[in-house]
Amino acid sequence: MPDVQIYGGGIAGLTAALLLEEQKQTYQLYETQSHWGGKLQTTQQDGFALDHGFQVIQSAYPALEIYHKRGYLNDALAFGSGAWLLSNGRKTLLADPLREFPRGLAALGHPGIKLNDVFQVVKLRNSLINQSPQTFFRGNPITTLQYLQSCGFSQSFIESFFKPFFTGIFLEEALNTPHSMFQFVFWALAKGNACLLPGGIQTLPNRIVASLNPNNLHLNASPDYRAEGRTLQKHFATQAHYFAVDTHLGLVKFIGLNATNHGNINLIAIPSAVQSGYAPNGKHLLCVSLKPSSNGLAQISPSQILTEVEHLLSTKISAQWLNTLAVPQALPSDTPYLYGDEPQPETPTSNGPGNALYATGNIANPSLNAAILHGMSLYSSVNCR
Image (cartoon, rainbow, N blue to C red; front, top):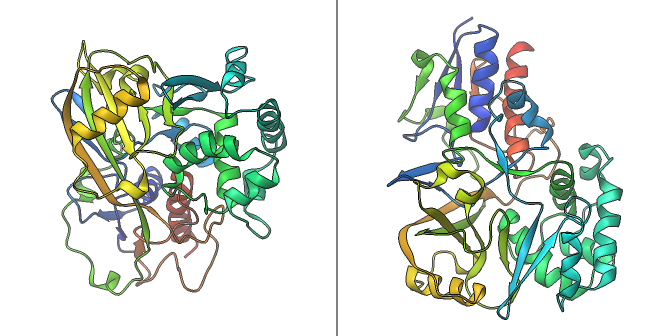
C-alpha cells in the first residue's frame, strides 16, 4: 500500500501521524503553514511565550489520555480553580467552593452573587461530574444562556461570572453556544484543571512532532488540488495584548474577569505565575484577552488597553507592551456539536483517493478533545480499509 497522505498539521493530523508512526505504517504529513500545531501556536519573543489567543489545556478532556500516557503533559501546571471578579474597583475571588474551601465562600461578599448562586454551582457540579461526557451531546440543545437561566442562576451572576468566563472559551458574548458544549466544558473544569505547558501552548504539538520521523513531515507544502472546493467553516475570532510586568499584579494563579458590561477587555491573566517559562527571570507576562465585539478594532491601542487593566485592578501598572496577536479563525462556529466523529455524508473523513486523509476540515465540536478524536478517527479509517 502506498504512503497515507495526511493533509493538515494541526492536532488532528499530528494525532493521526503519531498513531501511524507507532504502528510502523507509512505516511506523509503535509502542512501549508510554516509551523506545526495549527491554532496551537506560540510566538517566542524576548524570552516571553506569547500564545496566539489565551489558551489552556483542560486536563480532564478524555481524548488527552493519548498524550497523558506518553508523558507529554507530565509537566503541565494548573491555574487556580476559579477566577477573580473585577468590577467597580473591587476584586472578589470566585473559587470552586469544594476545591478552594473556605476561600470559595468569599464570593458571597460580591453584590452580584447570591447564596442561591453558590448553591446552584455546587448542585450543577454534582449533577454533571459523574456523567459520561457523551451524554451531554444527546437530545435537543438549547443555548447556554437558556440553560443557565433554567438552572436557577440569578441574572447578575450570569452577567458577572458565566458570561465573561465562558466568553473566553466560546469566543462569543451572547452565550448562544449549545448548552451541550457548556456542560462538557463545565464537567472538564470540575474533573480536572485548566493547565499550561512550559514554553506555551505550542509545546504540545512540538512534542508530538519530536516523536515523528522528520522525513515524513512537510511544512510550507502546496495545498493538494483535491482539497480545493471544500466547504470552509465560519469562525469566531480572538485577540490578545501582551505586556511585560514586574509582578503578578495580585492575580497569582487565577484569571481575572471583567465582571462589568463596560470596556474592551474580557479577561486578564498572568501565565508566568502558573508556568515560569512564559517569562524571563525577574519578569511576568500579562495577557489581556479582548471581548469578541472588540476584536479587530484598530483604534484600540495598547495604551488604552493598559489603562482599562489599571481601572479593573484599581492600581497603576508599570508595563511594557510586547505584542498584539489576532486570530481571525480561532474557533469554528458551525460545528455539529457532537461528542466525536460520526459518519456524515457532507463531512467525510476521507474525501480523496484511498490513501488521502484530510485533517483540515470539520470537527465534532470546537475543542481540543474533538480535534484529537478526529485524528484518532482518521487513523482508524486507515486500518479499516
